Length: 196
Image 1: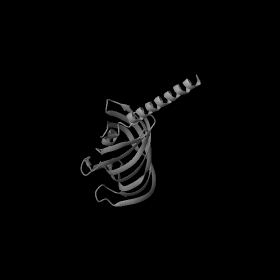
Image 2 (image 1 turned 120 degrees about the horizontal axis):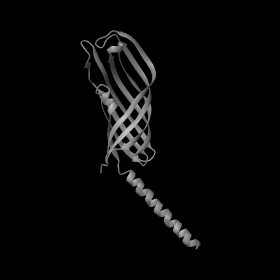
Image 3 (image 1 turned 90 degrees about the vertical axis):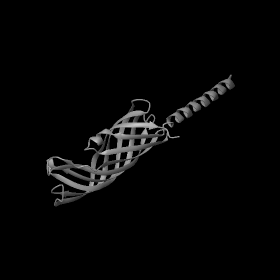
Image 4 (image 1 turned 180 degrees about the horizontal axis):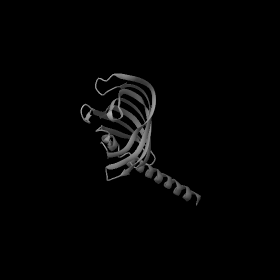
């Protein structure tokens, strides 16, 4: 009787191992995703995209950019712009499986920026580099589409120059130091696929 029990236990362990391997291989079936973030587009038309690669059952790596070369006229000579060239790389940990459920992430980022806001009389440009954290969740929309929701914060070392006006303005000051800011308001559309 004891041998039958041990034999049944061994069979159950082997079957559960097969199930875990099948679940792992199912999780890794979706290896890639591309995404874009809607609030970033709303920031005066900032172009943005991100590519993700799943390299382990609960882990994905990502690289992305935000780019805005546009200047908007708010009556001559008032111009508004939120120009930037920002890049980042990072990782995400998925609590259940990639592209399903909750995640936390970390990233390194670098940015060059130029901002003109006539309503507040603020004109400045500069660059920064630092790192950030994010958290959120992904909700399925259909087979290959998910909706990402979340937020992120970053700490960065910056160098900023302030001007009197948007074009050839007189320099009014310079600042260097650390800043903490909301780096992401995530409402993203994600397309997942497997590259064979």
